[in-house]
Length: 175
Image (cartoon, rainbow, N blue to C red):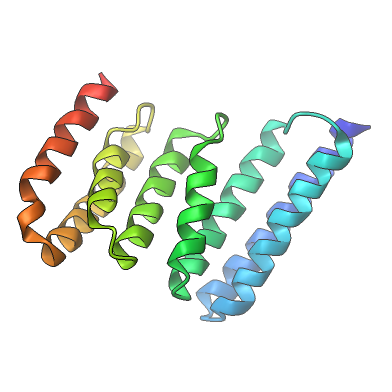
């Protein structure tokens, strides 16, 4: 019964997320954010009602909805909420490598917009070094991380040496 509830919720969360994504693409960011939040709430309620650990399909649907909600928050200028959502996602042990890299990049952009340049640089460095990212996704992630790094260094060019140290630390940690 709990598994069926979660399967049904996964489909519902994904449908709500797709609906919100369409609103986002149309420029209705506030409406999209509200719908993304509803999708996350629906998924979390299903997990609580099922009294089971989150199953794969629902976990993926929730992670995607949270990432999308974080993007809407950032687009609306709510960097703090974006950072909070992404930080929460990064604590999820079931989060896949591509979603983890995306959460790091999104959190880095939120941190940069809040003036937290060094943490944003760290997120950019670690996003590139997430283990398990398929080759097809690595180039896109590297490009976005490079753009975030450049944006950070435009604000504070004196952080170049710190950026290099963070990249070295991320590389060492990934090995």
